[in-house]
Structure formats: C-alpha cells, structure tokens
Image (cartoon, rainbow, N blue to C red; front, side):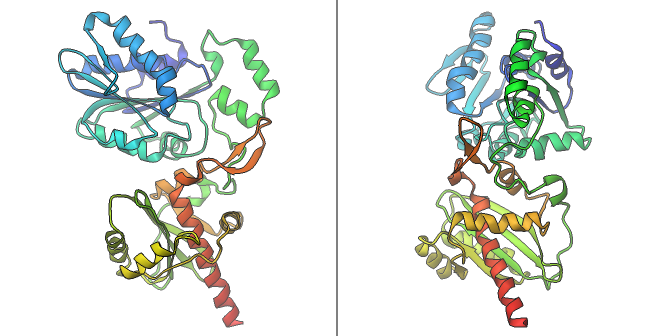
Length: 401
C-alpha cells in the first residue's frame, strides 16, 4: 500500500470512531475497504457492516471499490459477492453486509464487529442511520471508519466533529484538502478556489465545515444555542408539537420562560410502528408531572389525525399558522432574537437544523423549494408548536393589556 499523509493518519488512529472529513477525490472511498480488511484480520470470523449514503453511490462507486478489493485483490481468500443480499462472504462464514443509509431499516439486523461508512456527511445519511450503526456494533464495541466530504451542519458536525474537538478520546477526525491526494491536479484545485463560492470551496475541496447556501435555519448557532439541560421550573408552561405519520411520528416538547419570553426545546421523539393510542399513551405518561398548556399538530388537511389523538386523550389543536413559510419565519424569529434554545440531548432536532435547506440552482443560489422536505419530521413538529405557543403568548399579553 502507498498511503498519502491523510490516509496514514487514519490508518494509525486507535480511536474507536475515526472519521476522514476531506475534499472531493481525496482518496476516501478507496481507503475504506483497506481499513476494513485489517479489522477483519484482527477481529476474525463474524459480520461486518459497509454503508454508503445513497443507493446510486452504492451502485456506481462503493460496490465496485469493495468488489475490487475483496474479489480481485484478495481473490486467494475466496470472497464471493451475493447480489440478492448485497453482501460479500467467504467460506469461514465471515460476511460484509452492504447497505444504503437511505433505508435505515436495512441496518437494523445483525451483530457486527466493525463498520465503514462512505459519504456519511451527505444529506441522505441522517442521524438515524448513524444510531442504527452503533446499535449493530454495541455487543463487540466495534470500531468505525467514516469517510466523507462535508455537505451540511448535521449530525456529522454536532455528534462527531464537535465531540472530537471537545477532546472525547473515542473520536478522531482527520481533515485534509483534495490535493493531499497526489493524483489530484493542483490546477483543478486552484480553478475551484477561483470560481466557487467560498463556502463551497472550503467544504468540497478542503474538507472544512462552512455554512452552506440555502440553509433555512442559518440563524441557529449550535455552539451557543444547543445547551446543557437546565432545571425547568414546574410552573413554566409546556407545549408539544406533533407531526403525524404512520411510520414516523415526531414529538417535540417546549418549555416557556414566561418572564424572559424564551423557549427551551427539552425533549424529542421519532417513532413508528405504534397505533395512535400507543403514541398518545406514551406522550401522556411524559406529561404526568408537567403542565402542558397546549398540543399542536398536523397540517390543515390532517383533521382526522387530530380527531384520533383527541379520542386517545390528547386535545391536539390545528396550528394557527397553516402556511409553511410563515411557520418557518416564526421559528427563525426566535433564533434571530436568541429566544429559542435546544437541549444538547435532542440530537435529532440538532441534526435536522443543520441539514434543513433549500435546493440551489445552477448558479449556486437558493430556490424556494425545500430539499427532501418530507423527511424533516421533528422540524415540522417544531414549526407547529412554535406557531401555537407564540400565539398563546400574544393572547396572554393582550389580555394583560
């Protein structure tokens, strides 16, 4: 092997979770199967996990790299690719299970000894896929090597990079530019520097986090607005936002500091496979010792869902602001005035805040269309509850006046 400096740092890392965050074409994907081969040699027979962000990436890039490594370069070991199951196996029973993060349910089976994650910074690779990977490795306390270019400020920033920067010994991040790869042309690197917006060049060619164009909640600063949990006085009113869904039902809980007119997002959930009655029962259990002043959920058309929740014991109200953009503006207003804070333990909301963005046009300018809007269940719930609780505040102020 002839590893360049960035790859060598990852090879030498003894951290349990090592992440290469680097510029495009920096030699990330090709390095992943090399590292995995060493883990298999170390941990011996068993199952291993190889995950990439999307199915298209899996077919076009990741799968060819994996097959070349194990079927061609390691032909003497007898690895065989099984297309129907998307896995590589050899005669001793060792398997490499290959999956796409677009279907996190596919990560929910098996007990694995190590994992590699390709392009885990892309929008399609969400917190749920990372958490599913950790569950598969928990028995063996397996190691992870992730490799990606940064694309957003989601879980990769809040749950990986920030932990490493804070000194957590379980995490190691290696960053390097595209030109760390000796095969990457210096002229191309300079062309990108001179022609791209600064944020895009920093992220895509230097592997550095920057605030991308189109980020909807750009006024949210995770470093100052994600806070350690504080004691919430019992007299503070609570409000709950609900995003209905047969597969993904999301709830976010808000506590209001009436004197400061500030709001604290202190609890979240995202669950599926439960009936409305079961969802409601769990929510009511959480509300036993809390003064919930209002439950808000669903779009204007989801009248039946609200009726079902009411039948299950929760008076779910239609949010007073039906328009999506108007609801987003309410949330932005609180972030701009630094009156909405998120407990650090609410990792799902923090991931979505760093990923929720508008599509950009060919010139790199944001459009009105929200990218993958239907996947941001917690932020929909947040939009509903903020519309509700800020109206309550206005009405209370009006009555006092």
